[in-house]
Length: 338
Ligand SMILES: [Zn+2]
Image: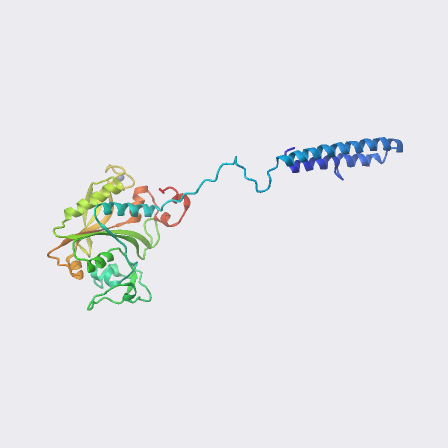
């Protein structure tokens, strides 16, 4: 008998008040003669006492092996410590910051609530530019007073007193250049907001990293060298190609592709059989942007680029659905580094 329950079952079976061997014997004894009843009754009582004694002995043996209340069993394995994991987007952000810090860049963060001037107008996006369309931009219903978060809209601009959730980190270029003379070498990184529907590759909030370099004699070759260095550090692929594109704040503008790091250009599902993967948008800073911040566009040139942090993470780890980054499913998050 290993448990109290088993011992109790044994007690019930042999000497219980009903349905036991003893109870059945006592019942049968009623049909016996007085002489038989006397000797048989004594035998039954002796047997009952023996069974009781045996059960009591077993019960005390069981009690002796029972663990005292609140006892610590030192033979049990220890409880494993649950280590947290850093979020994949944090890993990419830190890697990008590390790459550019080593290249001598300054890292900036800025307000997520921006004014129209810094987000659009100073970046050469006049009031009728399609990017300002309500379908892309999330405006605040009640505009904030620019002073309340440190924005300074120069007097005489036509900017409407609109406040919005920044649609790109490029606003930080303007904020920095307004207060700092060239040369400039910065990366700005953080969340941006668009009126996008949620699907495999879009979320209304995502993260962007923005780079800006301004100085004397900065050329497209510097942009290409910088993007190649970043691609090598992030993906191990340094071959890049530029495709002509359009952004209001750069001229010329280019989309940048890197040679597919998975198939080395042979064509695979990651690069959609093209051998190239688009990673960022870039270009030479438009003179109108320099004019907006009071830089002499004859004296300095510069380049800028912008890249999606989620996109980098999706490419690096083959994550097909961007929504996984925001669902906080531990089975997903535990696959990344500490
Ligand atoms: Zn490929």
